[in-house]
Image 1 (cartoon, rainbow over the protein chains, first blue to last red):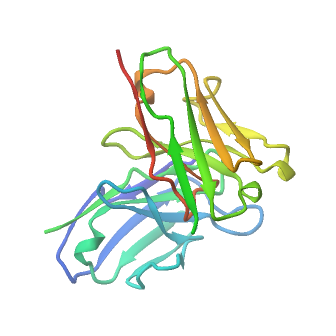
Image 2: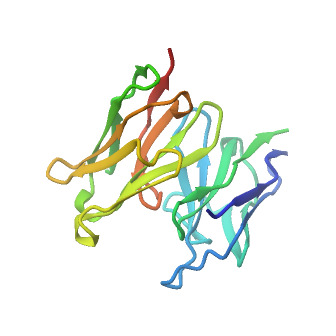
Length: 112
Length: 118
C-alpha cells in the first residue's frame, strides 16, 4: 500500500499568516493515464470531509483562492496564503492513483 | 444539487451484521464508481472499498484488507442506491461510515455511525 506521510501533524497558526502542510507518498503517484491523483481534503469539526484540491493543484469550485496545491514526484504541499478562522480543522492528503486508496494521518490546523 | 444520504447505522454486538444504504441524487449515479470511507472516533479517514460502474466491469468490487471477506458493497442503479453489507463485525469497525465516489471527490454524505459493542 502507498503510505502517505503528512507533516506537521499539528499546526498552530496566527490569523492572517501563511500555513503549509507537506505530504510525502511512499511511491510515485503517476497514473498510467499520465495524471497524478493527489487530493487534499478539509474536515471542519463535526463535518464531513470536503475536497479542496484535486490532481495536485486544481482547486474545487467554491474553494477560496488562498488555498493552493503544488508538488511532484513524492513531495506535495498544501498552502494557505492567509489563514482565516474558518480554516480551523483537519487536513488530509489522499492518493487516488493506486489501490487501495490511502490517506495521510491528517494535520490539525488551529489558531494560536 | 448533489446529495448522498447514508442510513442504517446502529449499535450492534460483536459478530453481528448491519446493512448501510446511501441514497444518491442530483447526478447520474450509474455513471459513477462509488465507495465507502470510514472514520473511527477521533481518528483519520480510512478507505473501505469501492464498486465500479456496470459498464466498466459489471460492478466489480475491491476492499481494504481489514474488511475483505466480511464486507460487501453493492449497488442498485435503478434506485440510485449504494449498499454496504457488514458481517462478522468487530469493535474496531466502530466508525462513522461515509458514502462517496471512487476515488473520493467532491461529493460526500453526512455519514452514519456504526457502533460495535457489547
